[in-house]
Image (cartoon, rainbow, N blue to C red; front, side):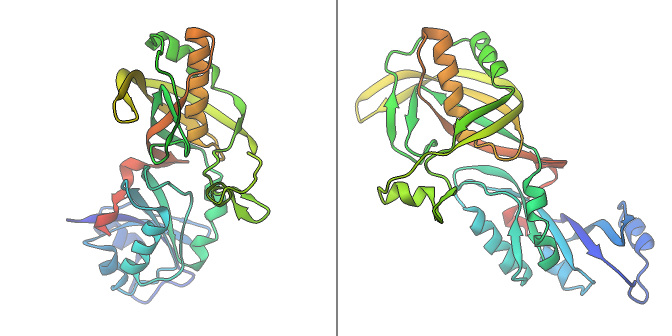
Length: 289
């Protein structure tokens, strides 16, 4: 299986015998020079085999499709093992239960770009479960609230609610987040049952599109089953938005439209599709490096 990687090389002086245009042309690739940097896509069986060619690699950015079940730190650790390079970082965390695009930065100079890349807009495909809320804002947590007699939710209702969310909103950050208070991540304070103040942040949604809506049977305890809904939504957002916060806000707005009261909601699934101009379509599975 051949894997394609987007490689950024800084070549102040071309190595003897190395002709960038010729090499790129032979590989059927596009190259261009920008501020002394050569940007190319190189084709090798594995990333390790590319590095073994001893080219003058200084900067590498990998587009990785993170699977569900592994942390962002786990992805970074896997790239360290595959490349033998210690200086590896990323441009945006994904929770273990989330999947999708991660920009993994390899090399001392490339990791300096993390803050720049963190500020890019992002898009997500999200399944919002309406009818229950959870302690973590996703399926990892315990059910803390549920609506046993939820009204009928239609596509029209969801679309109206989503349109009202295409703006900048003041929303609470999830309690289980890495936001620090007095030097300590908020989720640690929650787990240790320490006092904390839930931060309120500006969160901007650029676009929100309803992709699908269906009824779902939701379990509360061992025996109680009640009707809920799952809405699959495409959110295009600015940096700093917490999707778990959007899911909960969507439940509140839908509930007010249907019955004049907020409905509990949580994030059932989450997949990141884009970061700036980088698209999940160009990403490779973690198993392929």
